[in-house]
Image (cartoon, rainbow, N blue to C red; front, side, top):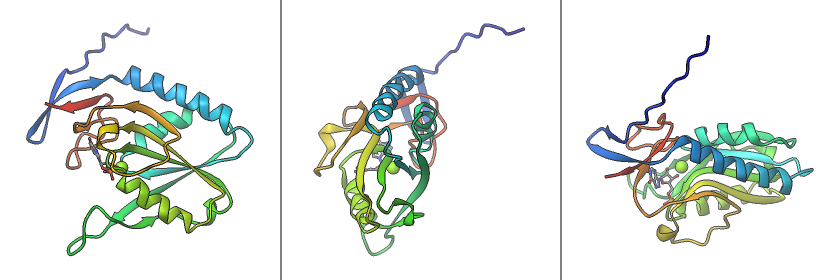
Length: 186
Ligand code: IMP
Ligand code: MG
């Protein structure tokens, strides 16, 4: 027989050397994702989009989003590799996993967070080389006060202040991606 469970969400957590406060709970994230998915279902109906999920950060967002997307569509995954050593680690060198499936298609980039916007601008530039018909950008989070680039943002699930967050796919030094809720640095 099913038992009623009381779900206790930890308000403060420690990840590596830092403390984080609970910021956005899973239920709120999921409700906002449902709203965005409903818009996609209406706006992209009949367009057979390809959802291009940016790993690692967007894996949890993509999983919840795609369960709510009901229109015929494909899903594919890319990973960004940046220069290491002599060059800046900010600049995207390669988009691993990008292939011909985007040519002449409507592509919806699925990203975890747009901070300065540098990553998204670099990704859009790479994507253009593969001749998509149209590109739309969906991001779980946006830090409007951190934006340094003009980025076309079609679907923004939540806007947050310019502070470091983790959970729900986002990491601090590799940890915390598996947290159900989003936490903000103390
Ligand atoms: P941007 O190029 O400055 O827009 O940064 C984008 C990337 O930085 C994201 O894809 C994340 O991987 C990472 N990032 C930015 N802000 C945060 C944060 O608050 N928590 C965790 N990762 C972040
Ligand atoms: Mg990312």
